Image 1 (spheres, helix red, strand yellow):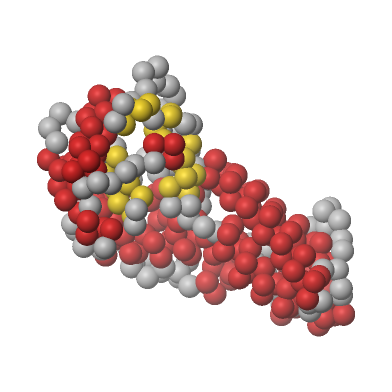
Image 2 (spheres, one colour; image 1 turned 90 degrees about the vertical axis):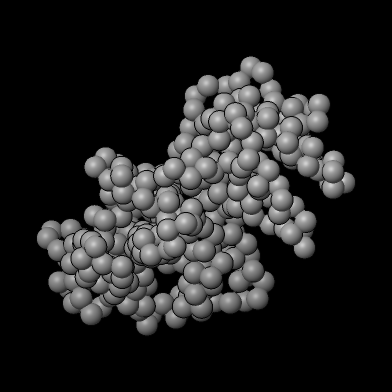
Length: 309
């Protein structure tokens, strides 16, 4: 009902002249709606002020109020505005970063801050999981690992389709590895790949890669009029730039069991096989395989006797 009540706002903001709203592949993208969250976008300060004035007029006509204390401005780039924008006469605070739909967006354009926020949330989720397992006397490590996937992995993986190529993701992987080592009761010097092998688990990056590739497939097949499709076309135009998101996804795609142009991302099984095959040579996991065989990669029976939760 609320969305229907404010539906006319979109056409009014789009119809504004001189507000310098950004565009995506030639389509104006001045605002984003999700439930009762609203994002206004402009390339210039005066354009944003014009949009806020239109929002104020719209809300007065319909007896709606805006919580100015919760309303923030983020200026993307290194510059900080000396003159604040106002909503109905009240200044709107400018901040370095802001949460939008669970992702922390920083004015630098980097998603490092978002990953750091997820790492902090993941640590809290680990502590809560261990405390709950202790309260309920859950000592079966197989069950504890399943609970990790349900309660912690999903926290660590939120929005991975966007930040999967950020170097800061190492901090998220470290949470997974430390959790497994704590279950084994071993110190941090034990090779992580051997710990993963004992549990029959794989790095979280494989899951993140697959989620990102699924997202790319959805973008490439979405309706041309959708913002998702427009964003994909812009990424394709920037494809020659090696560090671009789509370039990296295509590289991962070509490593799996499909062609880069395929709409079907590589299966998790093929990605896991690549991980195991890359363990050849003289590293410690290769020595582990020589001693116990590659079939040893799985949850080991003795772990049912371990109680380090």
